[in-house]
Length: 415
Image 1 (cartoon, rainbow, N blue to C red):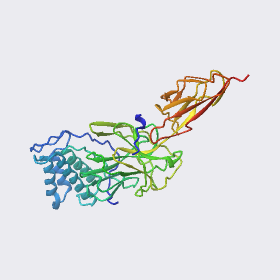
Image 2 (cartoon, helix red, strand yellow):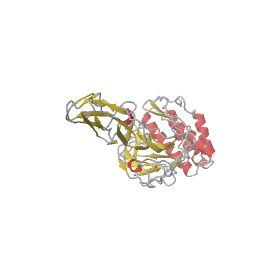
Image 3 (cartoon, rainbow, N blue to C red):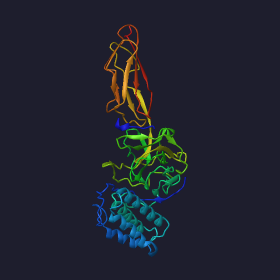
Image 4 (cartoon, one colour):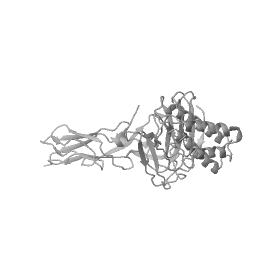
């Protein structure tokens, strides 16, 4: 079922990124082997990128930076696309470190940030990688770091410390740009389970499956009020549809003391492309003021092998009786149940099996409809003896259904 596709299967700190904006990540076409210095469609022209380098880098590193960029644009015939992409990621690493060290012309001003973002995207785009840096992508609500195959266990954490990831040594086979971006809204995950902010997009460039489990951590917003915070788990969208609920893990690198949703713009639509697919996520309305609840300061973590939008879900559902629990009739009202989330969202397509110990019952093998409702079609005690019907729901992997199974008692009419 797509709404619930579930899989159960320290440190460098680089703050990056800011006001959330649309991210353009469709990979441009990439042709290897030419020597003319052309760039893929949609990329900044080489002269524009060179002007950015001249405007950002001081004389001691300007020439070498231009040379490294020119090598990418020229696409030497003795280098494969993968080799050029590795060189591009290493140049991105160099630019980021220069920026965070305050060694670029203009320091860390907004104007400098905008130039750095444009240059980073030009470098990525030149070798066919997604332009993954958006406007404001160098503020405390975002993070970026380059991880190498030999990099020791590394924490990449946003400047706010509301989201982060631990990447064990050897988790990548090529130089990899890891980014974390704050997402707006109250529900970007592809599930009908109740979900709670904060939400972040985790991204790896080039896209890949990590060779070891990485530990993702996300804070629960202080002004979000789940019925039972201890049930919450980290979850993220998966390429085939639905979500993966991650096994619980400790994340000591977060500080959720001041985590809230108020700082996130609520009118952003972001695109995500992986493997030629584009996933559009709506930006929902902001949460209004709610009773404060602080979740254990350190956030909630889970282990995964792939990146996508992440957030917190309540993997719990409630089954309630939608027919009398005890009745005297013949025929009887067929047993029926409704399955919803704790906040009342109906859960369709949940298999429900109705069985009986005696008497007659038909239509017992069914699934919940769009309203979360499922029912047998006919039920009779058939004789003077009572009949007991049982409704048993099959929960998706990782989900618990309260009130399951449910028992119904049917008797002949009283004399």
